[in-house]
Length: 313
Image 1 (cartoon, rainbow, N blue to C red):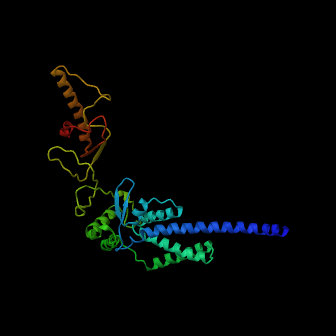
Image 2 (cartoon, rainbow, N blue to C red):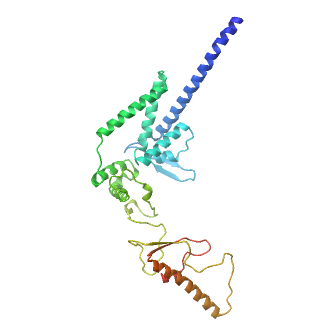
Image 3 (cartoon, rainbow, N blue to C red):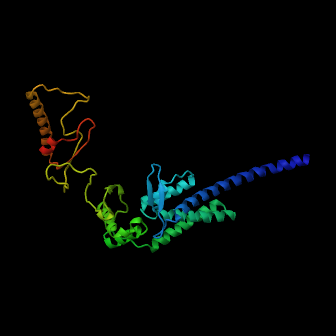
């Protein structure tokens, strides 16, 4: 029995060590499997012959897209390693605007190669350092074979954008959308040698009832709500001087739901005169400022404007 106890004492630490190693191995395999699952989900949407994905969102809305960043952003991903691939696609979309599906598929293929290397007993640190060396070599090779793009060469930019749109749903309308995309980005460039732009400066306004052929580029500000104007007023204003008002161009009202009882016509005329005088004074100040476009903050208690203020303006 003493010999059996000595054998058990000698083998116990070895068992714990094997258990810890197997646990770390299981975590690595779990991470690789989760990342490969994400890559497999978007693999079939890659390229001009890629298929679109039909997704139903939480609010019941149906979304059809073959853009990797859009698909992954709408997926509910819980695994930490899979979330890293979603963040990878988001970073690619922010930095380059294209190739979101490619980076996810490429990352999944590299991780699949890692699993075969791990099964051969190669240490993870050795694999990671090899990937870093390969990354430096690939970056150097891509820099050597790349061709610089002149931002003043509009034809080459149109060719690049048309290539990006070839795998999208709107590929058949690339002749219309590619010039709009190029001109909109060139319009917000701080300088011709800039390497990046803030795409939040380009606003997309969607209107119901139109088609893709109705898409146009407006060099200026487009408002969702139609402008309020009197007889035959303009709906477009070049070189606009905009006034932002935090008050309403209408008769003042009480905060509570009160009623004013007028007993005679003289009092009613006095109220109308005061209202006319109040609005005329405000409209004169706006006119004096030289503003030709007025944006009014809407109030819950009062109308933003009335017919009398439109008449004065």
